[in-house]
Length: 294
Image (cartoon, rainbow, N blue to C red; front, side, top):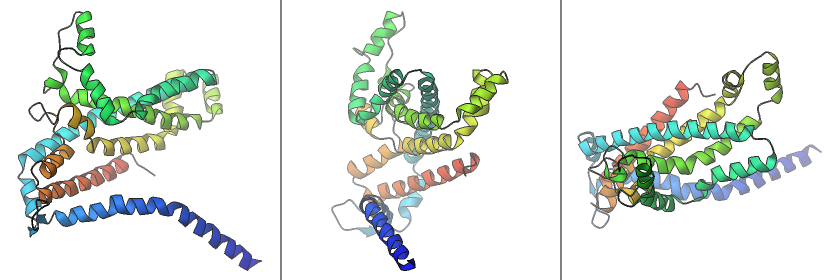
């Protein structure tokens, strides 16, 4: 009997390993091996065509003196602040709103409508919003003028371009995070709300005393994932601004792209990529500590 149980456990374990094996192989091929190779390339001066010249830590020392790199990192941080805050607030507000709707059909229709932008590719969304933000014939400027406002430059303005780019990312992402928040709200016991109503708590008090503390784990997860995503922004910047105007939207990932595929400085680009990965890792750990992740 004991042997049969052991065989069954081994069979179940083998089945589990076989199920996750394809995912692990893909992660090994497309994530771990490229990371190791990027770390290796960062130690060389290489244009992807000629012979690699060993440079040691020269690429990293040059990075510390590179004003463009620090400027791109500052732009990335600004984008992250806008993106993370907006996605978190909007997705939570949308989840609370959808959860308050009575009737499964109405709630489902509203949930689908909010989630729909997440099904659109970033390239398509960026192209669409580029037309909307067009300073000459864009529909947003027409609406502004309709209400008596002045025509805006949007993507042509160094003060507005980064916000416009962030709008695209927020529009795509907040519906997905709304679904995550909504699933967490569904798990909050209704008895807690009923007891709070009996005690005279209003809607705001119920939210901050019951809902918000009970979805803390979900909040931390969304803050961490959105922060990581914000440091990796590239697609909409490539389509909408190409890092302009005057470098106002040149984030670090776009700077890496320019170094690697426009200037063919693969060694230096890899060094910055490694540094950015470490920065994301450190920021994530600090964020987890500050939010007291358990």
